[in-house]
Length: 196
Image (cartoon, rainbow, N blue to C red):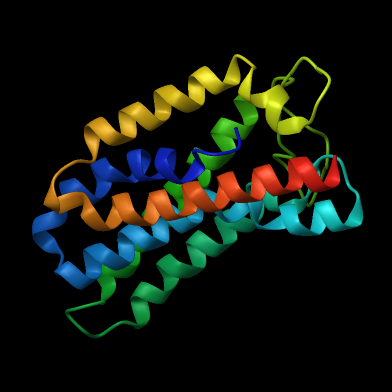
């Protein structure tokens, strides 16, 4: 999956934020949305390195293993014990640790289904998951992917995103997700035409 990690992440964290929305200020909700959606794309921050280094599969990096993110989530949770404020206090940091981890897990789950991940990195870099078999055609990676069966999944996730995150209440998560979506699209097209 190349394009919809941010939208899938927004869908994954929505039930958590919605459940506790009355317990949060507007600013806390905004930070949780941005953090969770950013977490959903965080494992792909290694793509720039993999393209420049000529590495074929960035999913074999530590960024596609669970350990790093479990440590980060536990650290965020432990920070809640240091908080004395009502706003951005204990409750917020505990929710942040969950939202962060759910955003990450949405990414890892999608990559596990569509190609595999180094789930146990940094302890083992063996790839677990399903092979993303995309038929190679004359052209480039973008054309191959656009014409593949995976594009149907991309479209379905995007439709669910538009259906379940509508209305003024979800303006910020929609904008943040769409920003990352279009950044991924531009990056994917650029990489496909320049580096293929």
